[in-house]
Image 1 (spheres, rainbow, N blue to C red):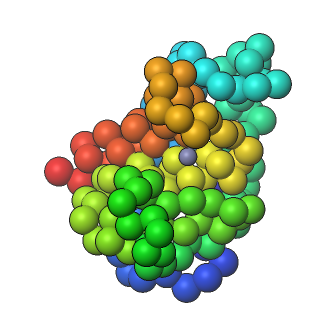
Image 2: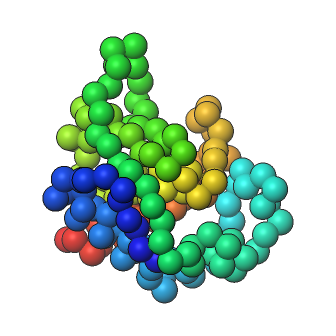
Amino acid sequence: MKLLPTHKCTPEQYNVITLTEAVLNSVDFKGFIWRTKFTELGDLQDCSGQDLYNKFFVNDEYHFSWKVVPRPWYKRLSSVVGYTVGTNIFTYEPRYKTMTIPEKAGHLAHELMHILGFSHSVQDCPERARSLPYQVGDYVETAVKLMTK
Ligand SMILES: [Zn+2]
């Protein structure tokens, strides 16, 4: 699969996108999706890992935009890293600046899972931590950490 940003990104963002793409295309990632139990899948709860992989991770191209935006004053105390609307990913600038490259890749992967249609609870709970966006984000962060050290 190819991750194709529809807007101009910074060189660092392109680097993060390339690293994230490499992980999502890896055989190890396929195995991870095949064997991992995900919560909060809704209608897909009964799908096997293989079905999930074949349905969501084998498209040729994924188009999205990724913008780093200021955090509005009324959200200045929130720990949220960013959000996704449709195929547009927004990351709050103060958080973006403090994140490492692996953390940025994990964040990007998490938001990409929202673009693919996966969601999770708003409230922090054990089910949310085991949802697909969170587990894929954690997986990509760890894999990129290993690739870049
Ligand atoms: Zn999320």
